[in-house]
Amino acid sequence: MVSFTVKGTPAAKARPRFTSMNGKVRAYTPKKSATYENLVKLEAQKHITKPIDGPVGLYIHFYLPRPKRLVWKTKQMPSIYTDKRPDIDNLAKSVIDGLNDIAFRDDGQIAMLHIQKRYCEGNSQSRASIKIEQLEE
Image (cartoon, rainbow, N blue to C red):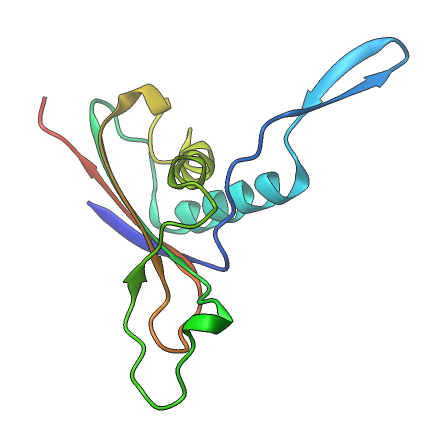
């Protein structure tokens, strides 16, 4: 089992964009998504030596920046669930794509996925906490 934290505001996987150069169409990932995937990849490489073979269990907890309307001056601010954008599945896609070929050989190996999306507690920094485990076959 491997656990690590990716500091910074989690970015959702955006839809691919298309451009035309010299009559040829080219698809690319938007910069914000690509940057966050690379951040996940760099942090994962610090903790993972080789990809897992077989089924993988993945736990991802996203902590998003707290909006100003939920910042309290006199009360303690616990971490609370959020139902606002970005979508949880798009957040997970960006992490999974960043872990591909680092934690596992292919994202098809993910047999169990647990995801949470919450606002940060107190004045803590936004982040994504990731735990990866090899499941018994």
